[in-house]
Length: 221
Image (tube, rainbow, N blue to C red; front, side, top):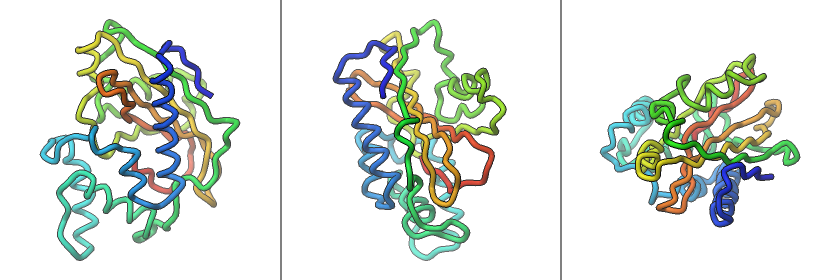
């Protein structure tokens, strides 16, 4: 179900459904090639982008205990973590998909638009964390009692939300809630936030939140 409060055109709604489908294809499987389709190489940042420092450090830590050269390209960096978390497993991480089961009746998407005057730029940065717009909305809701953390995308987008606001004077975004689990963990809501780039006609992933108080299989976003 999609609640189009942003009054976006049909092609934008169709693009969102396609993006959600690509996400589900990737995370219900362990094939890294499906993650590449979801993230779309044409929309990610360059290899020398300073925002990749966190990802590079994570991969360096894994590669210190592994053989072979340390990858440098953004998608190659993520492939190391994908193998560790999903396809092969490393240490305590058991191989397998992030989503074994999904409660389709409880899953939905909401589209909204904010004008420039309502946008606080730092709330829409990849590394906004607890200062992000998504986190603040959850804290203001009845779900505030759940321990949450905001996960930023592993590879930043080439076009940031602030750039779109400056260019277009508004920002359309979508919150996609998927209720699912990786066995044997209990089901829990996963909230994904995307923003719309009208110039590319594409939805770009930004922040994600898992709403529960248990340990979990790592989520590489």
